[in-house]
Length: 438
Image 1 (tube, rainbow, N blue to C red):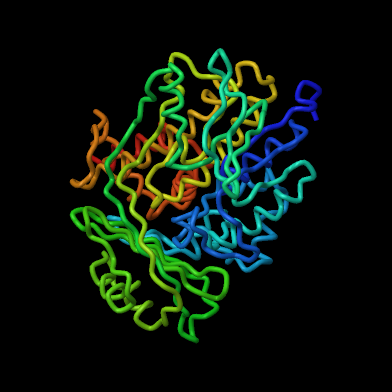
Image 2: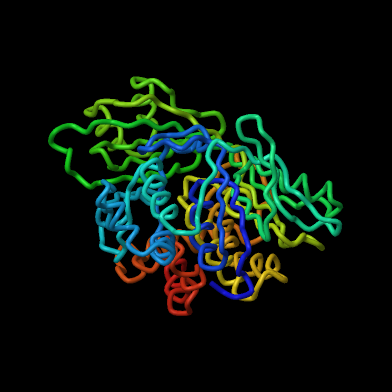
């Protein structure tokens, strides 16, 4: 433990994936890490109230795999031992976009296909095994405590109708979209937080299926994008428990029903019949749940003229983009890495260093959502001046990847946030794209 953090306490609000990753990187720096969680946590993997998206597909990008192994070495092996399914990108996944199915090739990435309850269960077990990490379950965060200069000095909490407070050197807000941090900042005189928004009008419905006997051990997964003007997309993947998890994405009010027959029938409207053919042979084994995401939001705390010491936003309290692209856990992981790097410089000036360190990955995630979602007429938001050139370049790279295995591998690594998109602007790639465009 670094000397300048000795005897200091840090509070993490929320025991979701962002909160757990935050606790893992905070543990080496602080004497006491306290996680506040409003739910009474299940002792076995189970969908919980505080994670309304917990019943739906959680795509694991390569960035999140690398980061979580960095924070908690061996965590991926533990997930596989607990039942997560190994997916080799892109050998085991049939990715269908506007050009059709992408080539089946090994891109050199191994990622787990896992339900959110099992992912949280295994990760939480590892984090709570750290000797200085503790959790207060069934405890609701009610407000930030502030000092005379507007700095955050602790939190007020409510447990069993008993109100109390915790004094702390740092609060990491992983409370999700419902974060009250913007209201606190306005109340304390810091001004309004600019929100970068994109109206995506997304809703997704999910359920578990028992695969037919002949496909029970098949690792095959399928991600099917909506091809404008079609509004329907889907992800079907094997998960722990020997089940298939099926998530259907709809835009502009086109929502898959929450009953089995209607759910399967809805898949006939996808760009390809393969998912309907699979699900019509499978047996539904869970209730169906729907989750709505009206907007992608980036709280631009980094653009504020002043920001208080003693608090850091992470996860969906900071960046909440379109979940269809599977970036949520990776962006939280990138923010955790940025926090760890910023802590190396001490608590003074922590927030500016953190915001600067997390910005590049946040920008990439936003650009991906912008580029893909603005192809749909139902999306509401400012269209960047270069959006048409982005679409054109993306289509050309996709075409070149049909026959160029190395370019295909590179594009997959960009999708998984392991390479910056600028690598696809190499001169040799641009020259080939121009030649193809002519």
